[in-house]
Image (cartoon, rainbow over all chains, first blue to last red; front, side, top):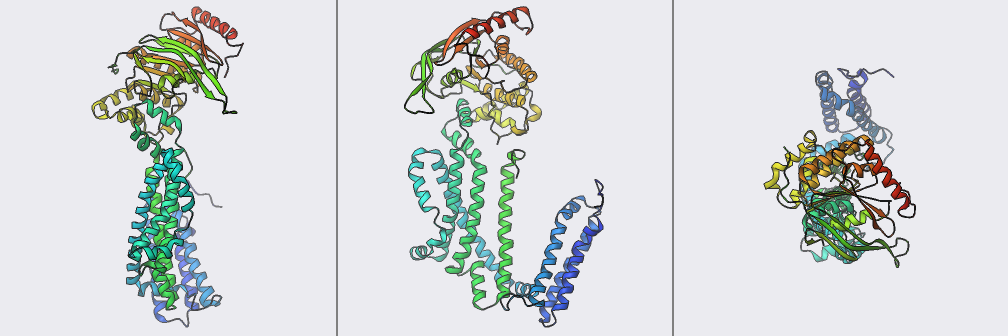
Length: 323
Length: 266
């Protein structure tokens, strides 16, 4: 291994070239394999690679002057290069050796083409999914926090509430779909309700356990400082439970994705889940994959956002626990 | 420079107090933790309570703090009976128990926020930060502090409420010897400035002699006050003076005979 000096003013050559070389290889593979593909597909795929190539060359030059960019590239470039090579592998498997049956598994260029040609509908579906997800998630979190704090704090609420929580909570929210469709006036409202239910359970459970496991000595100290009940709950027990609450929020977010997609592909006539089953109905598998890619980006963005919020709120834990 | 106490220090009286707990192994029997204990502390006095571990010192402090209630007997601050925790009886534990989610300054403010008087007394926070020498750490979170600094914050947090009585449950027990001696001086300085009535539970005979006006020795199971020794050594005290060592020898001997020859070690 080469000795890297402590404050190098530039990235090593192999690292600078990783992304451009990977994109050249991948595009080369595509050119070799895409003899029978429609020219339009190859064209947009080519444009994508010209863009990647151009941006990566510009960044490779810029990193010589910009330290923050260099740090970021040092961290991200190997992964980017690998992701681009994976596209090449995908081409080899689908277009090259026909290892996966068509039309169910189109190549990356075909998926990109679907992504571009159907962008208006995809954007609209993403928007609908976002609105539905956030309204259900917000409702579930609010109700979950309230019920979690009550169950965690009050022994009598815990006595009556806990059995209900333990019996009803573990039922997957999607299992209620048949009932929800009968009960609710609109599919959207019932989907939001189901998402809320899916989020409510983990948020309540973890909030309650966080609250009831508040160190007794924190409460004792607060009482000798003159704290009343409101202070004990909202300024001692709740902050002490925040690490736990976030675990519940993460679990709830995962459950909400699942419920969203299922609800959209069954009852709701909009959103990414609906788009996937609609495209599948027309056997347009390029569009199915396009929607899956959007979903991946959409859901992981929301996850990342929640992580950022946690890091902000739990800054006091930095150094106590390993994140 | 030093925040002046607004409330007068109060006397503290414990009269014939008993307390038992269910035995941990057999919930049907109860174990007597304190039996007919009585003590009285004059306003502004600093009294130490020493005794073997498990003799009920901490139980007694919790009763005085109002965190537990006695089976029988009476506890009074001045002439007011104690029946619930209150800001007029501050308590500092061996573990500083700082709220880890609040930076130092907001930990010190906690009592003011709890009593909803932060707005009027905000300037006192600065004074207390200075008093315990932690201005530079105002925005640090507790886990960045050393044990000694944390305990200073805990003291400031208790004192900012201007308690009539300050209860100290082995507050310096977890600190290394040098930090402990430095903090003993600091607690004494705070006491001399504010003349808060203080009850200090400790394992450390030297600490008791160095700090207090009076030393009470407790015996084990059930806990009772066995001896009450007035410590008339002139302040500031010299830990290596002949009188200091004589008193120390006397207490060691007493402890050896007190409480079924139980050793003082934890």
